[in-house]
Length: 223
Image (tube, rainbow, N blue to C red; front, top):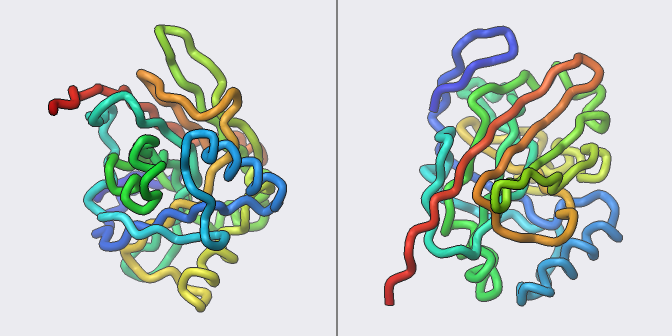
C-alpha cells in the first residue's frame, strides 16, 4: 500500500499482517460499558481483555466507498499503528467496520466480513509518542442525510499502543508489515449503521488532523 507522510514524502509498505485490538480501553469501566453495548446486540462477552483478532491484510483500503452485504454493519474509529520494512512505526486513522449481525455469532468472523478503511496519510509515531494521550479520536455518521457526532474522546481512554504491542508480540517491536488497530470508543447513542462514516485523529499540540471518510453501499442479501 502507498501512503503520504506528514513531511509530504511517499511511504510504500507491503502490509502482510492486520491485527484488530478489541476491548482495549484503559478504563475497565469503559471496557465493561462497551461489552454491555454489544451484548445488547447479542454479542457474547469476550474470554479475556484485550483480545487480538487477526484479519486478512487485503481487507485494508483507502477507498472512499465500501460495499457491504446487508444493513447490519457499522464503523468504529481507531488509531492505527503501521510498521514499515525497517520496523519504524507510523500512525494513521482507520475504521474497524464490522458486521454486527455476524458479530452476535462470532466476533472473529465478523471482523473478516467487511473492509477496513484507512487514511492515506500517516504520521511518524515518534512525533506523537510523548503526547499520545492528548490525541483525539472523533467520528461522525450520516443517517438519512443528517450528520451526527458518533464517537469522541482522547486516546488517554485506551491502552497505550506500546503496551498493546508488548501484549501482542511479547516484545517491544511490531513486526514489519503489520497494521495494528488500537481500540475504539463507545458510540454515542449506541452502535448503529450509517450511509457515510467520517473519522478523525487530531493532534491538538501540533494543530493537525488525519482524516478519512467513506460512503457505504448496501448489497442485497439474496436467499
